[in-house]
Image (cartoon, rainbow, N blue to C red; front, side, top):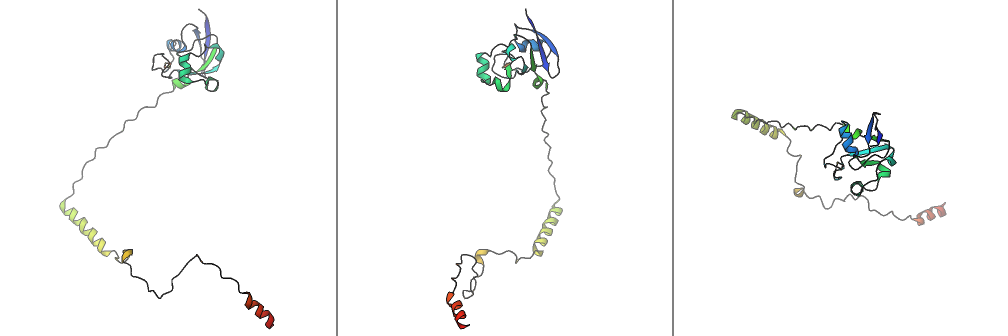
Length: 179
Ligand code: FES
């Protein structure tokens, strides 16, 4: 059984792996945490590893892998570890699997208690509000549809929409002749 060196990036740890078993199985045996939820059937894409170097030292992408990841390896450098076997030495990045998943925060629902007020207190606040309402000036509010009509004789203030008056040449000509 041929043995190859698999370097883990960025730690630099070197594992001796064979070319018979899949990368996923061997990494798991070596105690590395690799996510996988489909059991190596190439349907979940959780087991992705990023190939840093030696991409030609991995077996060609299977039909199932291409179907799941697409033909974008030359851009992403991602391979499914459950579908890949070693043909030589490689360097892979599994740091995405080592990251701790964010803990699910429990939402704390506060118990709301109803505050009971005494009848006297309620009456007192109602009285205060009524007094405040009476103190407010009442003329500030009006119904615009009930507004008094303006004096029709009063000239309306028109703003805009005015054409400029033409310049009167006759007056200037007159002045010149007079002088
Ligand atoms: S383990 Fe699910 S795709 Fe590899």
